[in-house]
Length: 231
Image (cartoon, rainbow, N blue to C red; front, top):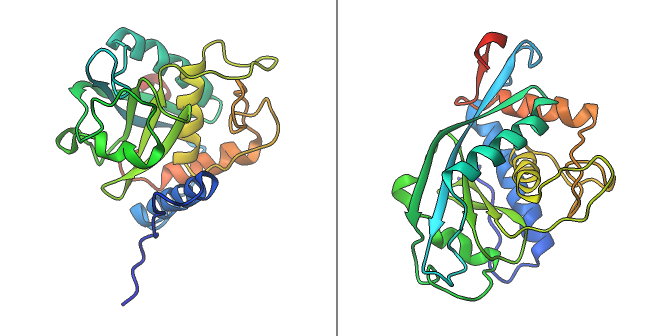
């Protein structure tokens, strides 16, 4: 019997194809998670839970972030402002400080996307939240990586972006927001002020993107609706 799970790309696949395949994996995950979308996605805010992992390694290690829990609060608050335009409320269920795992955990080189999943300590991975991993050095500013059949979001704490008018004032919240867009099924856009543009500080979402992100989010069982007074 053929599997209804997406086929993931191998290490030799070009980066553009890997990202496309991972995005496809995420969309399939969203559709399989609940089967049908809720009736009206505009009724209330949707609370999107994040489990934030601060990976640690030796001082010169690429896998170890220098961010603190206070930095996480700032980053998520700014990312939350971006996603508020689509009626999504980001919530942090837990911040985990832990050692990166695997043979590349203490690597001093720049990490490629094919090695990132091996850094994830599986015991702390939460299947009922978007898991966000902050690390020091990797090739991309941010990327989705499949882990246990679900998307893990990796964000580089040394991210750099091209500034555009009315763009984000800090790279990391924008990179996190961009990768959350991919996790919610959004594709790249050419408009440089758009959140889904590659490598810019843009934060805007068009009407179709807002609708699509909310619709996809409403199919995920652990993304719940919240009343206005509970946000």
